Image (cartoon, rainbow, N blue to C red; front, side):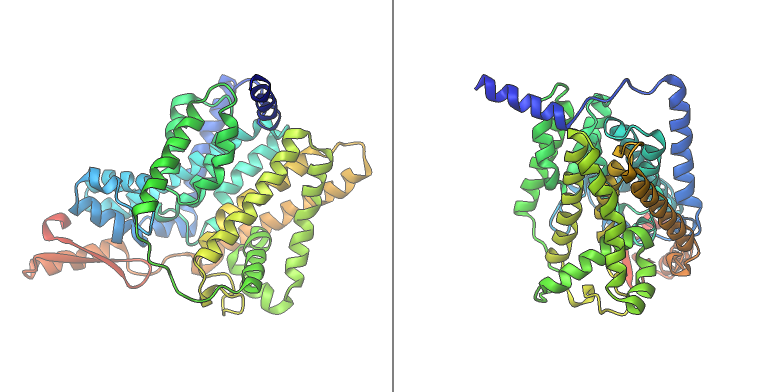
Length: 438
C-alpha cells in the first residue's frame, strides 16, 4: 500500500509540477494592469458596450426574477436546466439590491470581472507548464479576446460557466495557488457548471500532493452539483435523433475552425470552401501539438493529451446532449446556433497548441516548422479578433433596458399590479410586482 501511494505521488508530481516562486511584488502591478485592461476591453468594445444597457436571457428571465421574488437561500440551491447556477444567482442577489436601472450594467460588469479573473488564473496556473511569459500572457489573453467568446457569451452570467470550467481546470493545476480564494473559486465553479465532472480526474490526482484545500473544495462542490442534478428535471431542447456524421462535422467546425476564425466567419468560409477549411484548421493545430508530444517534458506531454481530450469530450458531449436539427452544418448560419458550445473546447485546444509552441527547442529544423506555425496561429487569431470587432451582428440592438423599464413603469402607472420587463434576445421577458420597478 505504501509503495502504491508513493508511486501515485511521484506520478502526480510529474504531471502536475510545482511552479517556480510566486510573482514578485512588481509583477503584481502588471497583473493588476492586465486585469483592469481585460475588464475594460470586455465592456468597451462595441458588443460589450451594448451589454451595459441590454439584459441577456436567463440573467433576467431566471436569475433576476428569482432574486426579486424568492428568498436568497432557496435561490442558491434551486436548479435550472437540470443543474445548479450558484454563482450567477449570487450575482443576481447582489444586483437586486442595486437600483433597478443598474440591472443590465450590474450583470455585464460582474460577468466581465469574473471572466478577467479566469484569465488571471490561467496565466498563473500555466507557469509550471509554459516557460515563455509572452506565451502565458497570450494564452490568458485568449480568455478575453477570443471571438468565440465575444458574441452570445459576452458579459452575461448565463454563459459564464463555460469560462469557469476552463478556470477550474487551471486552478486545479496551480499547485502553489493562494489556498482560500482559489478553493472558493473552484467550489463556486463546481456548483455553477454541469460539465465540471470532466475535471474530477485532475482533482483526484491533486489529492496525492500537498496543499489539498483546492481539490477538496472542488470535489465538495462536485458532490453538491451531482446531488442537485440527480434530483433536478431537465427539459431537452429537442427529441431529434443524433446524427454521428453531423456531430463529427459540427465538432470540427465548432472547435479548430472556430478557434481560428470565430463563429461568424464560418458561415462565409464553409459554404464557399467546404471541408477544406476543416483540413487546414486541423493542420495548423496539429503541428504544434505534435511538437509538444515530441519535445515536451512529462508534464507538457500529459497536458497536451489532457487538454486535447477535454476539447473533444466537451464539444461532443454538448452536441450529443443538446442535439437538434439547428446544429447541423447545413443550417444557413452553420455554427451560429449555440455558439457557446465552442468556448471551453477552443480554450482547451489552444492550451494544447501553446504547450507545443513553448516546448520546441531552438536548435532543430523542427523549430522552423513550429516557428512558422506560431506565426500562422498568431496571424489567424489576430485577424479573427479584428474581423469580429467589426461584425455588426455581435452588437445587441434590441430593446434597451432603460426603455423596457420605462414601459414597465408606464404599465404600473396605468393601474397594473405587475410589470412585464422585456429584454434580449427577442421574445424574452419576466414579470415582477410593480413595487420592484422603483
